Length: 63
Image (cartoon, rainbow, N blue to C red; front, side, top):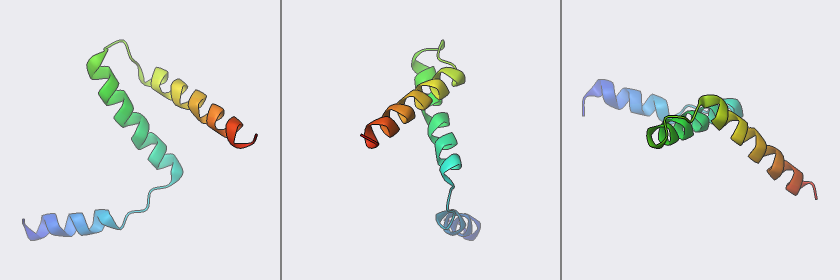
């Protein structure tokens, strides 16, 4: 491994993502994987599904 690559890996390990950044990363991952299987899947569909699941989870947590 080159020194430049080692330095980049070390820097990346120290990054702390915000909740919004983690959500965007998750949505991008889900979209990429689902779109491969079904080209009709859109980013909006993935975002809507995530919103729905988040609301349901929050609702159950408050009961």
